[in-house]
Length: 351
Ligand code: SAH
Image (cartoon, rainbow, N blue to C red; front, side):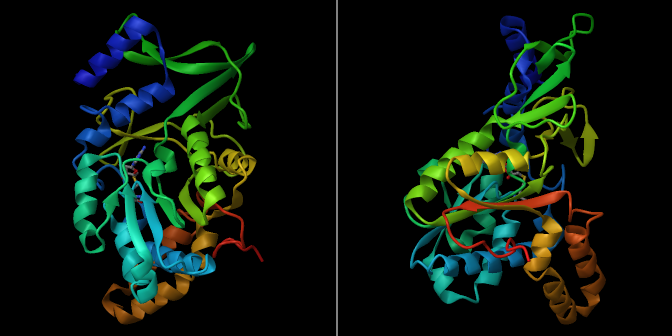
């Protein structure tokens, strides 16, 4: 039994059942025993798009150069990645962008990462680009910015709601009196947070989406920029019960081993778009990841890479297929871009 589990149990005994979001926050971010404080490295618990194919980061590097030009090619700007994992995506991005010397000269690289272990990995992977760890998005100084994040929004803690005959109630983590183990239960009647549009009798809402939207709105009201988020989740309704725990590639019970597994939930892209629009941001998308990457030239890049590496041609094609095919990651994953007013970013201008 982990000490974090003991502390969660003690907190519940003292204060009553805790919202799922608080449970998720403690599991992921507890400074001593949370997953981010103790996880050795990414890759064992799940794999992501940049770890699947270098084409992902390369296309995003070209995207960033394009957007920097669309912003008027400012001689200095902040390139920011939220939740960079092993630093693979940014390394692929900057290798691809490296052909544009003026872009590289203008780039000031910032990373925002919760895990000390991953900060170390990222510092090494990106050493050549002298990254600075922001310690909070709001700490990044004024100036034009391009912000990018893959599989970051799904880590934001979610509250969960369940509808019964009397209306909506909030799901909470309590203690089973018989077994003394953690278990889910429901509390008294509540209102759903604004902007949550359920599709069933279950709904999830990440409070962090609003906070993030506010920070971005403040930033992009004063200075040009855009923020690109890629993640999984529905475009048109709130996720239901999608909280999942992963350990060493296996999906496990989210209550079984707090702090020892990665926790994730689908992203409510529709709500994020509405919240951002309400705060005055220009919103593009969400569009499906396959559509987005194909518009950025995924297939052409895969063919070019395969010609240069004939021995790896099959592996390259399979990687890009995995990212773009609708029956793989292509439709479930989506891209959304929010920012200051201006023309649609590359990959979003629907025909
Ligand atoms: N972008 C990487 C990693 C995705 S996993 C990739 O695509 O491979 C999620 C990443 O976000 C991890 O690096 C995790 O440690 C980080 N993270 C999660 N919540 C965070 C938070 N609140 N602040 C900063 N980083 C966070």
